[in-house]
Length: 180
Image (cartoon, rainbow, N blue to C red; front, side, top):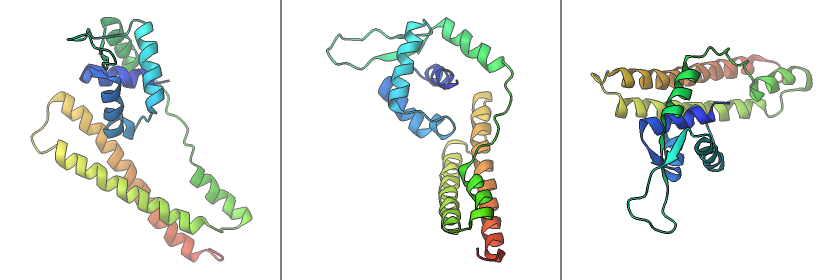
């Protein structure tokens, strides 16, 4: 499970409160590793119990004050260990592809509309990624950290480009299938 490693990464980039962390997940890491706010808070508790992170001391004690967390040396070591470890790619599992295969034996009712809906969603996501790229990765921004972050974003752009092309082709093919 990689959620603890996603949280360690985010906290090494910038110590944060749980709320700030969930907002950052919604804006960046969540594009490729999603988690609910409850999952993030639960994992923060586990990471703190395991001695991988700690809550920063509050500047002024106050009831209900949000805790900010930072990564401890053991957390950095765990993230480095996990980063260096080999992992096999995960097999592709996609309900739309399975439904398209099933349509070959039970009929195509509803499939074309859903292909169009998926195309629209992927086009919107592609536009969002391209806007992020334009805003955050202008020419000349090429520190090693930025280059790796941009590489992750490029993966998202390339995946969305693949899906928009494939869905366009699928809709063209679907139009030629009898009963499609």
